[in-house]
Length: 571
Image 1: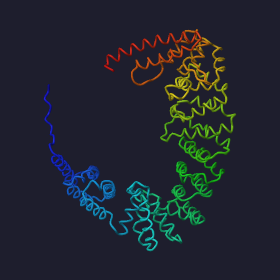
Image 2 (image 1 turned 120 degrees about the vertical axis):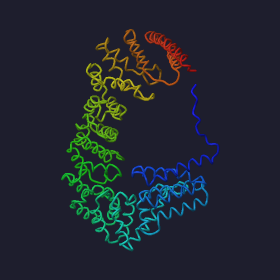
Image 3 (image 1 turned 135 degrees about the vertical axis):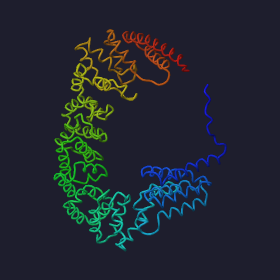
Image 4 (image 1 turned 30 degrees about the vertical axis):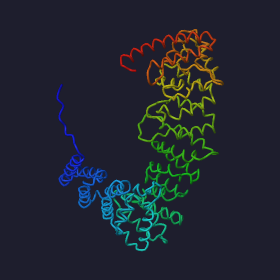
């Protein structure tokens, strides 16, 4: 009964635009008074919102005035301004007036400038998405011609680059790699190399070797011997030798380069995680197996979980990706796959590596099948163990386990059955769901119990029917079906052991363990029709009796759902 407040409601677009103006002006006026972090946030808001407000002609002067003010008083926002103005001109030029477009174009040109220092900061200092595409959305590197022009100017006048080296050797040079490469291609005698190395050595904050790495790429392509010599020199430089891995990865790769990196790691000059960069880009596949294996042995010797994960990543790229007829080193692969660090309950922030582990393991077991059961024991022991490589139940490692079961069903069942009967096995629910399928699998996927020959399962049951038959009743797929070439385990179980009440109850509980969407009453109705349809062609008395019991429960569940749906008004 309380009276609602009479909130402001604009009657015209003019009123809305006036409210925009008041709020914008309030924020503009506050820029000089705010603390630095708040001022930066306010500037970001004004720049971001300018794109929409430029489409309102009556607000253009106000918006442009503020943007010009920001560009003159707060230099830190210049890069954001350039990006936003280019965005507006690229994507919104049809939504704003011709005069506004001209004004924005002039503002952009003033922001960027036309002299060499200004152009290098625009095209080498900024890596814009807009430079990668034309107006039709086609992939075109529009910045590359400008960068090539700037590189040529440096070759013609080396003095131009000296004042820029202070930031070119930092993270500010977003296009530094391309720029360095273009200079390296044009610098015939590599006369600028000592200057660039000296500048890199002097850099103290936000260091980056993008620029130097690009130059070294050109050096590698044009004179590999000199490239090796220069890296040998850098390896002895106490300020720059830490950058050897990144410079190498960005410029070229040889066996000697790989040994150089290993030597630095063994001396403790670079860290083991510097090897991680080589798992992308494909360069790792250019070195010999013997040297690569030395890398892996080093990472294993570090004996840390992350070093083993890096080794797995590298191993997968080197031996598995795009390889067919390969022979994995038997002992080294074994040591890597079963390294103790992979099974320690330790939280490590690292991307999921189980795909790589599984790919290596699958290839290894194809070559050395005698190790299959040992791996099956490890997988089942650490299944869903927190902090280990098998923590994720949907891990592809289950495919490896499934292939082992197909190859060695009797030996695999011997391991599985011991866990099923163990009262101390705390992960029994995950083992059951792997066998049964259902909650953790997609509908079209089958539980792993279907991989075992039925005679193995029946023989195991017959060793202790009263306990084991009801165990299996919980594990068989919860569907009755007839399909050529495929056995329905639920039906087979009922045929042999359906006379036992505990078995029938366990199977009914199994069939109720499912999920669905929509009305529960409709779900149970469909289930009922499904099993009654199956019964029409069924001759076995045990199966028919079980269906009758199951239908009684379905009718009861259906009635309960209908009452609940009526209560909730679910129509």
